[in-house]
Image (cartoon, rainbow, N blue to C red):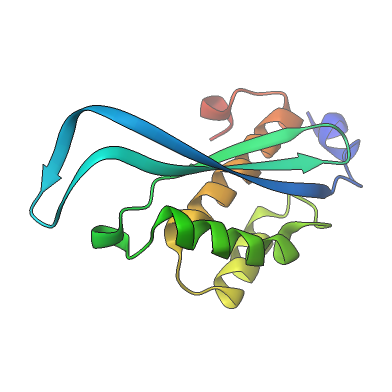
Length: 132
């Protein structure tokens, strides 16, 4: 596995794409602070210069996390400058940089974090569950 990982020494994120991902619910989901008929999620795709794509999903609920799909889209545009051009295997460093630049928006940052781990697992040649 070490040879495989070292072959990706120059790995870099070339692009960060954001997709709206609305999920209609069969029944209205109700808790004390809100009711939802659809989940307004967000997908994050990180594409590398080696053709590897990592995926993550954000599920913002305003009354719980203070985030919405629109807020996450705007924040993702800002986070692009943090991740594009960087090595996706430097997960800890990238998470620290995202936290320093954008101290809130944990839901969105968790989607980027998922995408980074997705890439790392692919580089290691393992399914994500085994990599973790």
